[in-house]
Length: 304
Image (cartoon, rainbow, N blue to C red):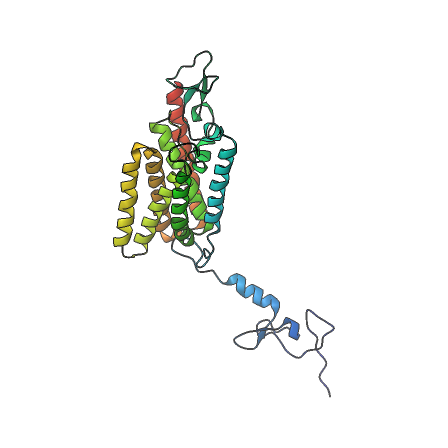
């Protein structure tokens, strides 16, 4: 007596006698996937892949997920694009640069703001509700007609290229982007606190945040810190020297914010090192920065 013909569970028209060694269903050659023992069907292979957790770094980034530093490329492209806009539209820096509070006349002249407004002068800056400047200023650079000009952009992009690839590979794309943006805003907030009448532009605050993150990452991984310490010493020395012609407040604010964010990612207890907890921590930091800006605005405008 002949055995009854069996058919593939996915392709009923195909007769087969081979079974999936995992679910015991009959499968045809098109549905066979080689396994360590026998063959698995397509669905069992998918279920197995979904149940395997992807290896991650101690900071939450997927191991091997940062092979292509996509976010770094995008950030560099945005900075370069913003600079091209500056070249075409000369008023871009005045409109979107980080500026806390000044009085502006009809000809564009700026005057110190001391809590009072005058006829013909208009309050401009974060104090007037232009909170977007806290972030947009970090994507702008000194106009090409200034002494430093395009070199401001070149130096920052060179630093972003070298630091960003390393930090992105360890943190993963989402955490890296959050670090960059938070560092940029953190630098702008310190500018607002200390020098609200100063216009500040540049990715330096965010890049100093990446430098601090680079330092914390290497220390957390237990690497030889001699070269890292020399690197950070050079960065800090540059911050001191450049204080004569750049915004040291933006540099320091970005450095402190980037270090704080990465320290939280690196040294939080394992049970708190989840995506949800890290997202909540980021939200808390944003709220704290917003509260600082609100209090500073109230102090400047006399509503505190």
